[in-house]
Amino acid sequence: SGLSGLADTVSGAASYTAGALAAAITAFAVALVVAVYLLIDGRRTYAWLVAFAPKKARPRVEDTACHARDIIAAYIRGNIITSVLSFICTWIVLAVLQVPAALLLALLAGVMDLLPVIGFILSAVPAILLGLTVSGSVGLMVAGFFVLYNVVENYYIQPKVYGRQLQLSDLAVIAAFLVGAELGGVLGALVALPIAAMYPVFEDLWLRPGWN
Image 1 (cartoon, rainbow, N blue to C red):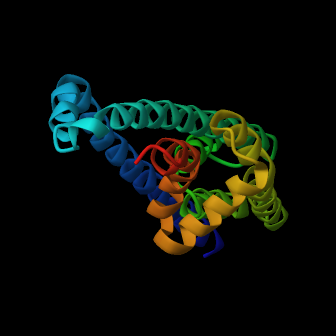
Image 2 (spheres, rainbow, N blue to C red):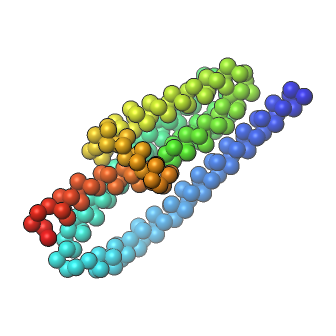
């Protein structure tokens, strides 16, 4: 009975992990298709959109688009850095604790790290369940690691990475994440930092006296 329950727990956690990872891979595949389309036909689409702006405002539209491109690129680099750190730290801790499928769980943590708020939960649950199959204390240590790492990432790593890349203060980064998540959930948290980083550019190019 005990062995049967243990097997069911392992099977359920493995299925959950595989399903979450498959969903993340599907999302990235869709994003890749969109990115390829923009690389192929992006200039023509961009020129078509700029044509809607008044002629005298087009230089400012061009400048705004260039700054937005640089900010989004920096945001993507920051996301990659935090995801790699999450993968490495999770793999080391789970391997030391001898949690089954440590590499797969670490890969899931790295991928889900791209999703603010919900990503932490999606990666922590299967890791904790598989940790419990080793022992109760291991399960608790895995849970403690995920909670601690999530706090450190949200309040130290992300402000340092995004603050440097996007030229935002630590407080501005934290506030952008919290406000974005509150207003728009996961999607809001994803777009909050680029929008916050774009505001000084928008203010300088569009709100400065003498531009109108």
